[in-house]
Length: 59
Image (cartoon, rainbow, N blue to C red; front, side, top):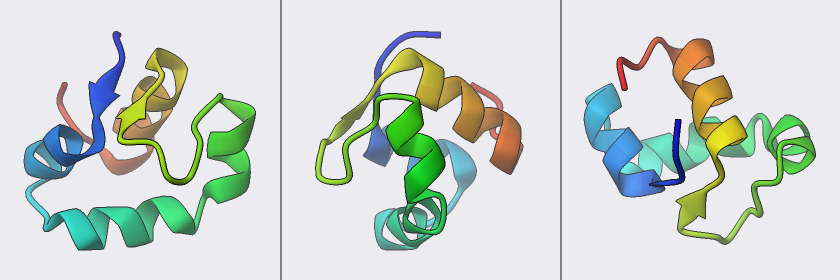
C-alpha cells in the first residue's frame, strides 16, 4: 500500500466524498493510531490498508 488521497478511496468505494468522510469520522480514534490526521487529504499507507479491509474496498 502507499499513501492515497481520500477522494480516490471514496471513488473506489463508490460513495460520495462527504459520505466517506462520515465513515472515517466514526473511526477517528483508530485512524489517529495509524497516523491519519482528521483534516489531511492524504492518508498514510497503514490507514489506507485498514480502511480497505474495513470497508471492503479493492485497492
